Image 1: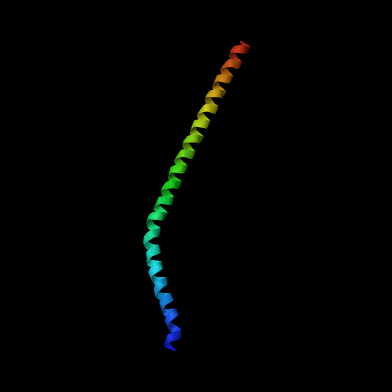
Image 2 (image 1 turned 90 degrees about the vertical axis):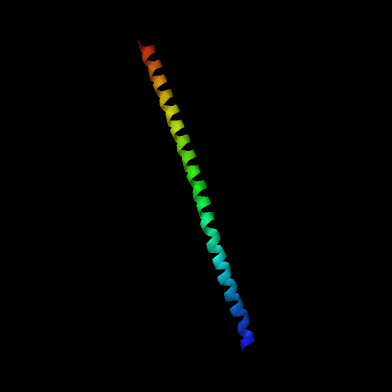
Length: 71
């Protein structure tokens, strides 16, 4: 009877050890992933702002050129 339960107990002990190792490793990994996502968000917002500024400047220049052409 005890021989048949030994693999079950060993599996449980190994599972607990792996769970603890995973808990220790996941905190820095999650922090790293969130940091990468934050950097990507900042870059994306910067690109959006630059695109909006270029669009606005081109629109103003085009409007001035059209108003000077009409006058």
